[in-house]
Structures are given as C-alpha cells and as structure tokens.
Length: 72
Image (cartoon, rainbow, N blue to C red; front, side, top):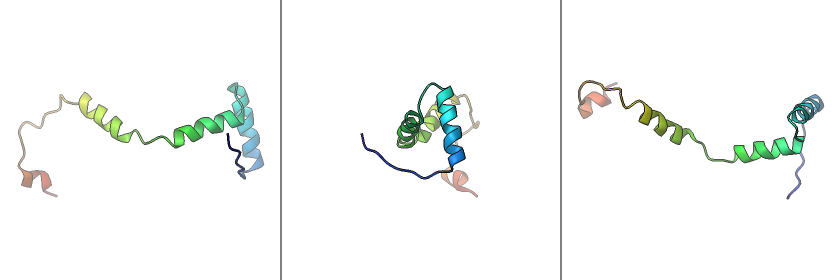
C-alpha cells in the first residue's frame, strides 16, 4: 500500500474522523472506500439503458420520419 499526504481544514478532518468513528471505521478506511468509488467508471450509461428497458410501455403512436425527428 502506498502512502499519500493531503492538506485539509483541521475542523473538517476532525469532523470526518468523528463521523468515520461513528460508522465503526477509520478515516483511512473511509478515504480508501471513497477512492475506490471515485475511480470506478460512471454507471450513467447502464442506468440509462435500465431506464429505457423499464419505460418500454411508452409509445408515440406512430413512427416519425427522419426529418420529423431532427426538427428543432
């Protein structure tokens, strides 16, 4: 494991330590969890696909031409 150093407001660090302690973990553990989430690819595309699957009941009533779909 590699060590890194950050600078932050002392009050925020104290509050974060207290919060982490209330959750039964250390501030280092909380930071490692955040770092893992931060580096994960966005789930936006998957969430969009799941939404489109759920709303298949929506129908426009007819098929639109390419020109109609591109009208602004």
